[in-house]
Length: 189
Image: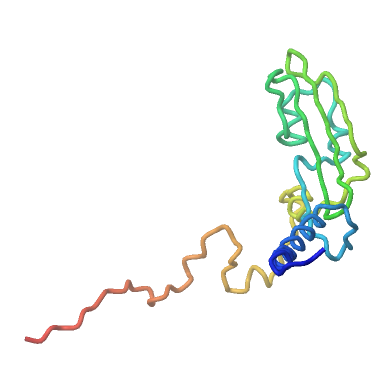
């Protein structure tokens, strides 16, 4: 077989195209990729954060308002069975770890009272720890439980920037108490 310059030139021009095509098809295969090369996967938390203590408070015979007071607004309300079924979904996936999912379905009777409680998915005791701010984690303190203020906090003379009341009238104002008057330079003629 005799090679002519015309066929050799075509083959050389087709070589880069074939190389790119084969490399792009290799990307579609299921080849092992080390973990340091994989794409970042963000944390995903969806639905309602359910705690075992909250779910234990739900009892048959409670009204929908009482259930919503304890668990919050449900993630899903069945539109085909209005006011008869509420679904609370707790989904949490941290990076490349296995996702945690727990589903709580509350069925109501015709009077709007809890008739049945169904749970499925991972047990709530295995739920990942939530990063809830301290202010939301603990219930509000009443006036009896509030920490007492010391004399240095109340008699310091400086107004408390976190106070919800207006500062006392004895605080001197900026202009020495007199209102500022705008002044204009005199025009000479």
